[in-house]
Image (cartoon, rainbow, N blue to C red):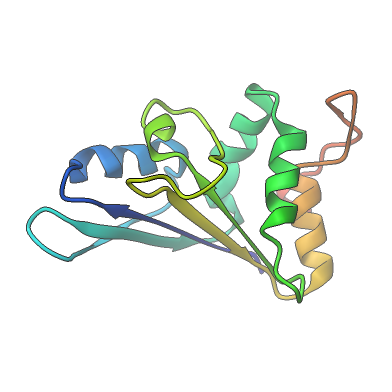
Length: 147
């Protein structure tokens, strides 16, 4: 089973409502909890299954960034091949878009970790979210139920 964990820090200079809205823009399927560090800061965290990534799946195709997304997944892949992690810009997410910053942003990014029970399942996840392409066109599309 695929498990998706998403988190984002809320800094004292940020609005909790705006950070929550950015998370909801890309992950409407996840119920987020907020652990408050102080009156002005905290951390949103939520967990779900692969269905939490349906909006990301759509955005990757809409923005035509399949190859970039596959690269980000591969860069974040664990040594055992059972998980991958990547970051998404909070600011860009706030307008419902997807962007992978080169490194953690000054005010923090949205952190996404995907774990699988085995390497085959992780490979099917990769192929569903970011299939191999030729000239930017997917070689195939998988149904989410086949992951």
